[in-house]
Amino acid sequence: MAIFADTESKMKLSPPWITYQRKLEALFEKDKDIEVGQIYETEEGYDLWIYVHTEKKHEALKHLLPNYLDFGNVKVKITLKSDTEDETFDEVQTVKDLFEGNERVLDIKEVKDSTQTQHLFVRFKPEVVQFFNDDTSDLNGNWSGLAQDIARDVLDIGLCGVHFTTAPIEHTSTGENVNKPLGEWP
Image (cartoon, rainbow, N blue to C red; front, side, top):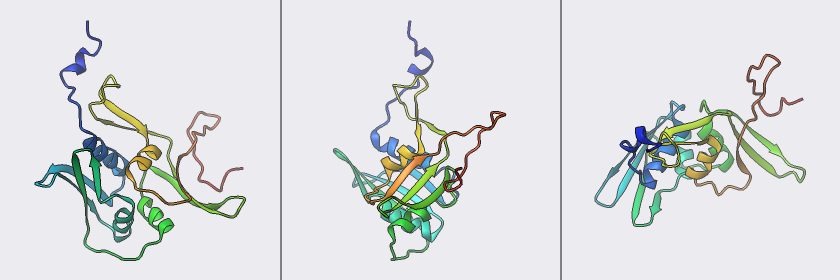
């Protein structure tokens, strides 16, 4: 008797470049300025197009996503599409621009530690991101995780002092979930 009888016929393992595309899509699905396209085959390998509707976010992605992904014998080119391009680059501002207006983000704060080193925290709302990915470790074939982990996986962040975190779940006396932005904690 198969426990997975409902899902066995539907399961087809997705290659890792499809999982990467799905992670990008999940990270930005609530951002109206970024549309992650499907991966399609070309003569040179595969191409993933990302349509960006603001100059700031186009520049941010241009600097934070790799141009190519290498999955062993498979190469995936990432192509950003936008009407305009700006050649200026400020690492911290780039990350702030990228996540501005993204509904998965609770807040973005710059803070200094005890040594006066500047840090940028992108704090995501405490929610699970889930999408179908032919994941054999899940009964329904879903991939589940946190936006902070997706951001670490898909963005080429070599920036010192940029951190992705998830806000804690806060509850009122009535059980209502309340999250406060950084800087407003008692």
